[in-house]
Length: 373
Image 1 (cartoon, helix red, strand yellow):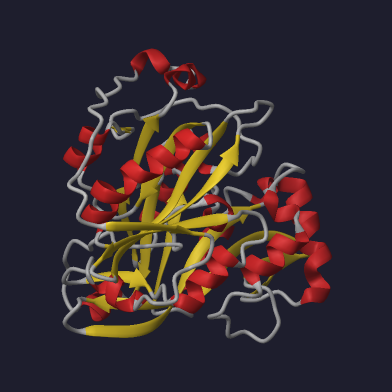
Image 2 (spheres, one colour; image 1 turned 45 degrees about the vertical axis):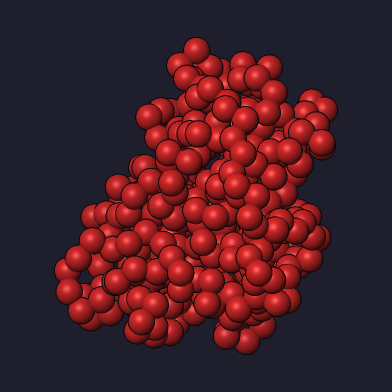
């Protein structure tokens, strides 16, 4: 069996054949434009013009894949900041006919030897269990997820809505000492790396989400149109909220999906989210969905009116027009970190979950959930 770390363009038909055998026909991975953007046009790409798919091939047929985004990772802390090459694993999948033979583990082991540090976001619990048994892999906490119902008639869209306890909305109004600015382009006046450092603690790591990376990730996205809300103090941007509006399948209803919080998280939530809510009301949005790997201020979110899905091990949600939207997940996915962890972090400690992935921040197509291998 042949294994390789990248896929030349002439072998794309083999990849699409793999998708047709294993995933739905409407899945975003069947879109060649998206595939090129996600796995070939990323700013940190270093492997010629190939697509970033590790693959196992038998009898001229792809039978297992690991899709990934090469990216620089910042590690340790705001005081001592090192940059190392890493990888963000977006999909890990083995052909159904080849499961149970350890093929997925073999391919992942080969893949992870080529990166000092890597991570996967949005892994299902069954896949995460497999990750957890592998050498140099460590499971991280589940993703933080909060929902705000602008229109309470949207609650029944959650099939088990009787279990949902919605906080009382208190018309939360923080002191208006910060300026808020909404735009359709990424602000150019931000030192993005400086904002990242604000949320880094000792022995943590985070994707190097500089302007070039964010422009690729959001402004150049082939499917979504993102908007940007800046929280400004004395002409300096202290926090940035990146979000988009999605449409629910077979309905006229829309939702806001918050994809990224950058900078001072407390400011973004306390001063930015009330503005996002008002914006959603003006756009006739029925709910706001916030997912983040960062530690979020639960008390402020509850005061605003968001409720956490952390207490719901499984929940059923409505179908969206985009089949891969994370709102469809009926679980809280977890994160995985892999690599030479002892040497990188110098000691055996609890790793801080500070992946900003767009790292993503788990978000739509760029954070497609890993599948059981």
